[in-house]
Length: 125
Image (cartoon, rainbow, N blue to C red):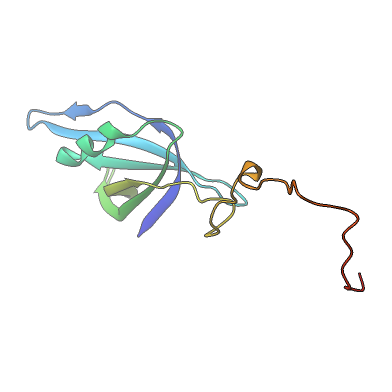
């Protein structure tokens, strides 16, 4: 699965526990009729993938959906979901003109200098 959008926020790397578990969060705002602010977490060595990105950049993030079950001290079962990123790449903004080649500048065309209005041809227009 993947999420595409513009980076709204990149968090600092957080380290938890004695085992050194690392996590870093990024928020991506989708560009659709109803934009969504999607928080994606990168864990362990994947946290370094965010070092080369900045707020405002358009990206595509490959994700996995994670779910876990937890039983609280009162015996109630709770479920939690997370979105975990494993790859991120920059997207180039699409050109407005599509695949059309650029139009040459008008300076490339020189005006006709030897035009004589007295010359007539036999064309009807």
